[in-house]
Image (cartoon, rainbow, N blue to C red; front, side, top):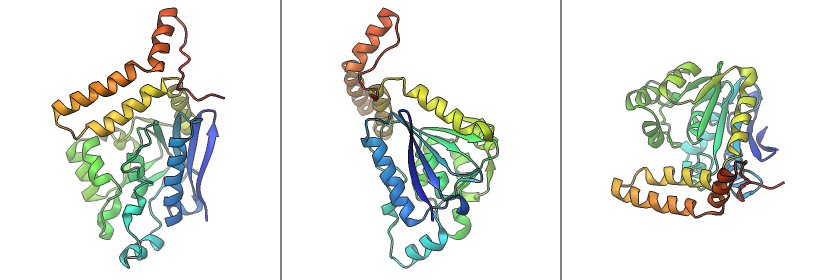
Length: 260
């Protein structure tokens, strides 16, 4: 059947959709497993960063396994709010998550990618939100997130038309950070992850939490909250170590970094 796997590469967690024979389509159980994997990354101090990818080279994730999920939803046996943890809605995972998109990234797979912070794709990857063609909508965070992440017209084109786009198009739209060869994809993601892991864990968590929580506040209120986040970071042990290292012209050894 496959599922979700969680491996470790030093202080980087590698979370995989692991059902390649079904293009990494998500069973109901896999949604629960993915939410649990994100919780493990959040709670395990050994992890500084996570990389999310798919097994095989054909697909990152093509979303829900419709043969299972559509009947469950249509018959009222299932509420999509149960997928909130997998889609990182209301998330408290403030460690960086990097998506390494290999192959097809469709429907719910696209939606889960939108919950990540940095996105790298293979040049062979394809992206799409086909929901409107089967009478449903991308309600796994996309109706809220996409117009906040990229220009309105491009977001609406993706959601309304449901056409697939190439990795280069997705990069131009602003969905991606980088496109690399398929052979270099995971290495490229891990290079970024390990570089992030050298930064202050306090700073990374504060940046992500602040960005996620301040975006909808009125400007004056957001500035006030931003100052509180900034003060918390500026007075942290990481800040003391970082400034000392800068003065002493050495690499910082941040207290927040995972320890062997």
